[in-house]
Length: 439
Ligand code: EPU
Image: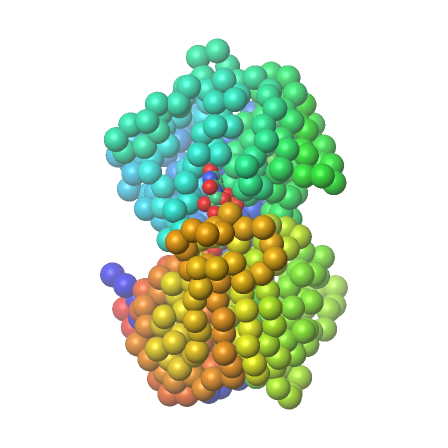
């Protein structure tokens, strides 16, 4: 059943919200726990659907999982890892891309893995060719089946040299999770180095792995015989922090995001300041606010870290509808992440999409049939509308648009937002939003 939120716009958000661990790290650290020969404990774990999904997946694979939601503490014991029934995992994967990362750990523990067709946000084709090619280089045998991919490693997995065609986050994690206890040395070139990946490396090092990262996107992993469990506190969720920052700015408000970390958000903070937002950084978090005056338009290109994170883009678009002049966004990570702008146009925004690369980053979508650049003409007066959430970040951007708009909006499908935003409804209420949830 889809949940619908009624939002009466026009109130500025004011107050404090607490940020917990990063969705895009926590779910991977949970998979890393399978590699240990003792239990692991993860702290600062947010209560979101993706954590629930990966917990269920781990249980189906024989791990015991105990989650204390209020404390944010998750314990995983991988003592009895087993192959689950394919039909059972199929039920879960509609909403997640994490199963692909089970490959390496399962190949090491069981000699085989079955990866169902994957879910996740519909923001592009999201193929898994880099994952499969990397696993082949480790010595795995890949067989395509009707409902997924069967992978075996009859001769074990051996360290190898891998050069990714693009610094994919998931493929880098795949290689890390596979290489740590493969035989010999693995050298990964053109790796992604997002903060969430560096924190995964922290976890693997605590488990006994030997991994070095050089400044040229090369990661070297020296295989060890076995790994132990870990105790680790997740880094904060920089995508969620930026979402609340945009919500504060678009509604002319002030939100203290407790737990937000400057270090992982430098690129976002620069952009936020350039468009006219302000922030105060303390040891316990970042206070984002609208200092008064007009907002400014800006050209932005999304990119791999340390560039502007693609997950920051969708909520920022709403702020840019409120900025004076022409903003340009060139999305270079996903080919199809602008579909959500139709609903914003329906609310009064003026956003036009282009197939051309409106920027200077060498982009894989050049001269292809993807509308991956956007021109946003501002400022525009947004009006409430009936809109439906298409994916996670677009969903949060619709909430922002509805909060900034004049009149009432009905936002349906908001359960998608629960995949990655802990207690967003309660947080909105605490910040003074005029909202009501219909089920
Ligand atoms: N790609 C391929 N082949 C592959 C793998 C990736 O062509 O085998 C392409 C993708 O299609 C995409 C690009 O490479 O165009 C980047 O994909 P990447 O592998 O880096 O992304 P991901 O691992 O699937 C994670 C996050 C995303 C985030 C990206 C980029 C998780 C669960 N998801 O996805 O988060 O946008 O990295 O930083 O960690 C979100 O949180 O809303 C979200 C979509």
